[in-house]
Image 1 (cartoon, rainbow, N blue to C red):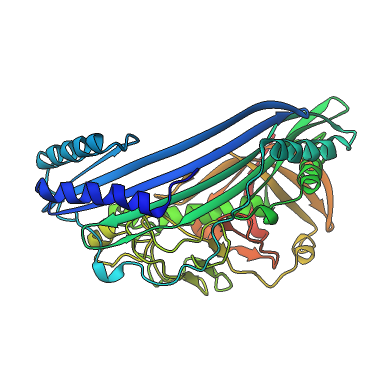
Image 2 (cartoon, rainbow, N blue to C red):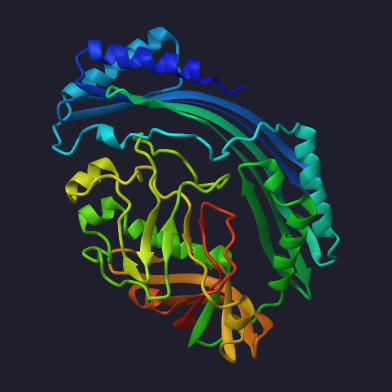
Length: 439
């Protein structure tokens, strides 16, 4: 059972009080309690079940511009006192860094907590197992599904408190329900695997078991008997599961850490056009029930909504306190990274995209992490489906797709089918004229 706020605050007060007595000029602490329950099923039989309870603290102390952090899961008072003392001793011999400090007090979160991030629903192990068995039953109703690589259901509940010596002390509970089904298809000697995944704050919002199994089976069957193609330059359409990865790359490239170090192809691009004028990218933390929503970041700074790209122009970075000082900009509450990051819907329907050219390649899966954010080079293994005259024709495998993000970003067209299934989300994406390496 997760601990309540009163218990977490008691732990925080002990640590902050002792750190001040021991000579720290400032301190911050995160106290977190979580309970996680997971079941795994393979071929409709239980393959594992576990429950874990985690309780821990992360303490950071400051002495002027010196800083030290320490973590522990032993929250007995004697151990907490020793923990603080060790952190203080380490801090005293740590080199000074002029950018070390707590965040500005005027940026601390204060306000209502009305985002619906916690669901009281609790499922028994039997309920979790039955959910997954039903999903696998549905997948196996397709006669081309011959095996599963394992499926699972997870329920996580957590509560935390963040406090510092500037008077900030706040926290809240969150929940997450997650299920996945991964299956193997077979036909004419060809075997392929694919999956479907669902994760939501509220149990009632995840996919129904039969939906999960049916979609997983459909993905796997459509990959059967793939063909190899010759190398060529061709326009690509990225499935929503894949197109969102470009947003993750973009987020890394505009983090204040990368900007401060100069290790990104988007350095010095603020207020410049980096996408075409049809593209808008938002990072909004106040979407109710959404996976990425939160009230404040890991420094206690209130989340403000960011329009990162407006009509193709870069409007802002993702800024934390430390790196923000290096680039002379205030934190915008992104010490924990993005919240709900997404491309705004485009104006084309999915049907219009796939009919936009006589021959297109629909990318369903990418392999590897071949992105260099220093120069923008992009190259990954991939598989997908060839589209001919607006119709899905045949699966394609063992290809490499490559380009440079400076060019890719300028040649994106988005569909109007955005869904908030993850914390980073994208509509279906068309990219004109990319290099595909084949046989």
